[in-house]
Amino acid sequence: GAGVSQSPRYKVAKRGQDVALRCDPISGHVSLFWYQQALGQGPEFLTYFQNEAQLDKSGLPSDRFFAERPEGSVSTLKIQRTQQEDSAVYLCASSLQIRGGRNTEAFFGQGTRLTVV
Amino acid sequence: GNSVTQMEGPVTLSEEAFLTINCTYTATGYPSLFWYVQYPGEGLQLLLKATKADDKGSNKGFEATYRKETTSFHLEKGSVQVSDSAVYFCARLNAGGTSYGKLTFGQGTILTVHP
Image (spheres, rainbow over the protein chains, first blue to last red):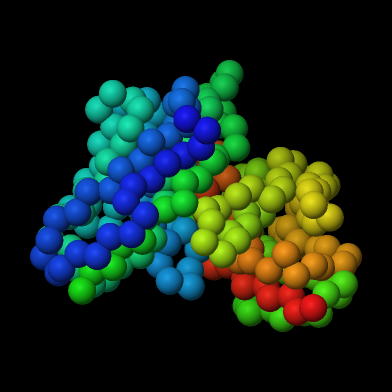
């Protein structure tokens, strides 16, 4: 596609509900990142995929957060039993990986704004 | 660890004023440095970047110079426009290991330009 696409754009969840956020990266981009952006803050790293392999999940705040990218393209971030502190914008970014394993510029989607009530 | 610190905002300027937004980073390794911009209702966009010491990134009249001696990457523009109103994020690229390409962001600076 032309850019990174995320859906839904907005999600309101009742506390305790499970949610799933989708990211469609730019076609051919090997690397995919999820970030969490709380209100008034900069994005914070959650997890990183290289193709279908999740190489770093050190930023996931709890075991209620789970991400997958089973075919190395579309990725889903799942949050179980949502809490109010999960309210944030969730950003997805993708980039090409070139010779030597270096990543080129990261392109960001518009994000999903999650509000837990 | 790796961190980025931006000047506190918000910043309010009149059109054609000079802009500086300060950014400093922790000196771990030799990171690449970036400025991203987030216009109202839009996603993060790369504004400019610099990959090594003394490099100057520039785009749309904005400039930033990678200063290793002061671990800084301050954003400047000589004459701002109303259309520059947005949130600006400084970021460093963490190199090496399995997180190659992971960005660490500053907290963001809100810029409002009045006519």
